[in-house]
Length: 231
Image (tube, rainbow, N blue to C red; front, side, top):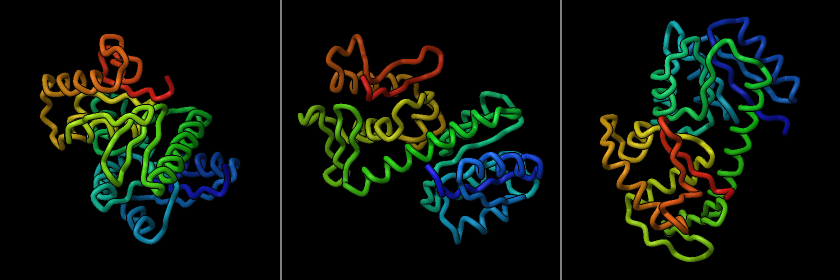
């Protein structure tokens, strides 16, 4: 993994310099932005493999930048940084389309590993997307026909079930709260717990060998759900 282009957006010079040094040692090319306005200028004219985005900045906060990126169809992986450790901040960032989240202070080694994982996942997803399909474990999602198969057997999913399952296939191994799922799939922030549970149950009945003992779509107690396609 080398020659990846990283955009670091943080108004703290010390943070930018530390991250630039760490990424450069990995053979990556780094562009720095000291504020939100500068970041948006770079993003309008350059392509990046990863954006490391601080939340708290004076001119435009990270949430607003993230919202604009996703609204403009820019799906570059985003790793958000924050000095605040409140869970609500993390949920909001992920709900708006961030791919991962780190609270300051953090170990540079952890950040580098997260960055590499996000870049790798994005590369795999884009290659699958260009071929017209998503393949995760025994599941194959035909993005052209909007059909999903398990071991080449067509799964009879409703339109909403297709959208929900595609979202899980696009983010294997990533845990999502009910709030995040409701926002991403239903495009709503007011969560209906019963609706989420009903659709999770329906999906399990169609993708699991034994829906009472799920091995693919798992519940993370007290948090939400995660899709594991490696099982």
